[in-house]
Length: 406
Image (tube, rainbow, N blue to C red):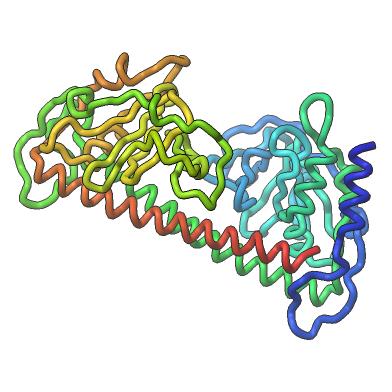
């Protein structure tokens, strides 16, 4: 009953045309369902994935990128089937896939002929779109807040979330004439290409950093790195990581309230992937960090870490606050030496004192540390700018979807 009410209210609140339109289009948008614009809904192959045979590709839920909705082909596989009997599972132009179960329910992918010969798996549903609609326009409607609300409401079940083909077919949206659909589809496809290019540049920088971490620090018992700045020579020295970094318990810096607001000034940090949880107006218990005296926040359980050069508070005591132990150490170099340690936690326990502080790292003279630290700092700044550009484009698209689709 509650779900029906939410659907009704959502329907009543819909605008009949978008806030932003291309010049020359005046027609009223009409209400459609996915069923109206699709020839048929079908379920995919019930087949195991095997090593890629070089021709036949297999797309599963996990092969669709959560953000870009592109087909991820780094670890492409083939379906274990008799291909002479699997023609019905080949993707063709105008095929729109939906994840039907699990945490990724609602995730969509529009077949791109540049992706090659693809067969779709059983946890995906295919909508074969009619030729009299623009497939890009329909696909972009699956990226809107309106569609996300539909997924949230429709997928609510007692067990694992899921949406079947009949439920997907009932998704309602507004559509203009085909010429306007085509304009919108082309516009968003070009924007998606720009976002993809920005992501590719960012990924290239991340891969460069990964490669340089491997080559600019000695490995496998070596005492000099594979790549070295000109003018430096001599062997690096073994040091215990714990001798390079002092640690401080974070208790006195824990935030009292988690009522964060972007209008407040003091960041609240976590050592996890999100890094900045929010902002607080608390003025006591601030951990002072500066570019001259930075802090490394180290998650004692997951072992993830971040380099911090500004004042902050934290949410949890499940971390250590690390700082270099003497002025002969370059903080950026030491941080990257820490990040370069290959270790995966296998149990829920604290790791700094018992494990990480005892790791051996290789240490050059201060001048070489500084040169390496400056290189990685500049690379990190480049990555940060590229990350901000990707996020800016993502937010632009989000705003345009809200303004140009209803």
